Image 1 (cartoon, rainbow, N blue to C red):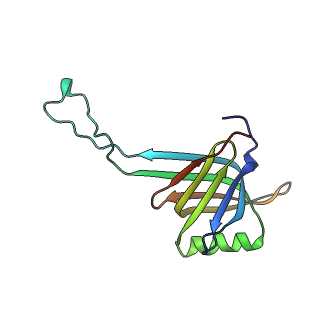
Image 2 (tube, one colour):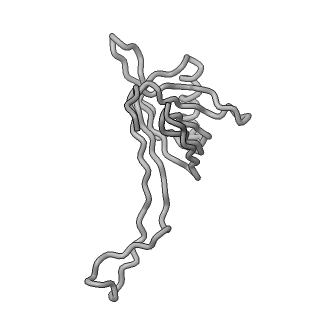
Length: 139
């Protein structure tokens, strides 16, 4: 992937009608995909080496980052989603990579302030269902 500015990653939220609105930009970020392994090792496993079952186990994604909200309404909306533990359909736009879209739960929402940059937030979301990925062409 080509080098790009961290501020280019956008956090979008389904407004309830299937349209996505931008609520934040992430200046730093981490996207993690995980797949739980299913161990099927038994007494007949060659050399007692662990054997894993292909295609099994739960997959999940975690997205975390720091950034700024688009406006006060976006900030309020994200607070409401967090405090009600609502699972909402998010879209994450990563230029020169792709779009990640699906249901997510906000598991952490941290506010921090810096005299030079103003109020920022740290956000962590965990997938709560199937996540779609659409590759974007390189710009």
